[in-house]
Image 1: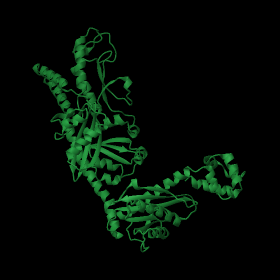
Image 2: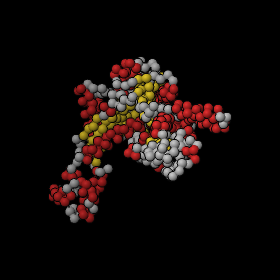
Image 3: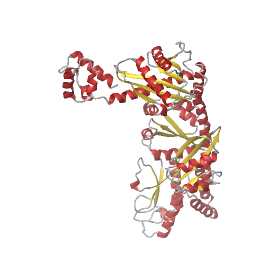
Image 4: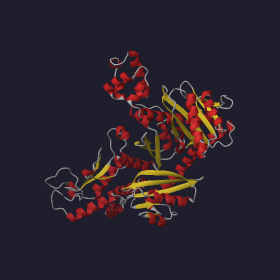
Length: 588
């Protein structure tokens, strides 16, 4: 499954998430080329902690971004949200850089790293930044433009920074409180994403230096202005107003509709959702209905960004949400990114659907051609299970057009109390199809029994008695209990099916499914058996011995834990051996 999915990963920048068997995100990473990076986890050997990570991956997902820088920002946001186990394990105790604003006792900015940030700490942290250099450069710029406190201690006399007007002179206690409040307001506005105030401040300083013919200082600030513009562009996936919003877009083709929803929280992209619908109506109408249903049980953000063609007024009547179509700025770029993700997701989904068709519909059709069955619409499969002739059960699973139809699965508790596969098969076939004839329910195109000629003959004899003309085949396993041969119930010949064909894989899936279903039922029946019923099935244990064993042990678990020496105090050694063997088999 993963190898097939890897072939579809695009050669584009993005952020990927690795999932374990519980569908939990255990690692988040970024890549300039998603295909190369994600494939590297599965096409080479790893050691140490990376090998541990790869050993737990059962699936992956990804978000395509416009640039590697956007992928980096998205990676950091997802790590902050999900706290994946292996990101913590593999990051060598390093954390991402933030700019921290400290307001008390005096205003100060600095670059900070925290391994664990707790809400109760109430730290004013802004970022994360693409790298420590970016964070330090911003901090240095803020210190040049605004008279923040620069020193760590509280000197007795004002320092140089005060005299060159880069500090308000907090040590003098005669600083301008109104100026301090305005400065704090400007700095916090910038750190929260409003770059205009800071850019205006830089231009003001540039003009001052230019007027005083200090072109060197003016040029330095011009470089800082250019850097902020570049940083803005690199972080365009971030929105500046800290609002919670969702971004919805779609793409449809070849009878399928792909829907992508980005979750933006506090101005940052922190996750996504994908879904696929088979088109049975107008694509936009299905999408609008999907959106309305999606928010019946989900948090409704302050704003939802959607494409222009969606009927926003209609949806807003159904859910208390504000739907907006952005026409410019970072919102438009985010909507375009969601559209690109939907397009790529649908292209990949269609390739997966095509592969699945080969495994299901096409394999089912080919099996029908091999067995000369014109319309192989439904297959009933049977398997039996018992323990030394006790707790006898049968299971029936149904495959319809190549796929399991679990609503049609049936369980049968067999009345026969001995190890007799032939008569067990006769009983279950009779009960299944006698009832079908009485109730006039659907009959299969093909019956497959788990076993060889013996089980085939059992099924055929019952069908003849019921005057039913349904083809029967048998699936035999090899010495390793894997699907090996398909026996034609008419000729008893082995049907020639290549072991690497989709038809053979289809037969294997069906046999595995009926075995799984039956054995699970068998285990559930056995687990309900009391210690009394267990002892009834062990040769050499009569009424008196049974009474003594129940009195001493009282439960199957305690009986299982008893040693042979302990059991020999009540029953003969050969009977004790039989009892231990029976209980060990019973618990499997």
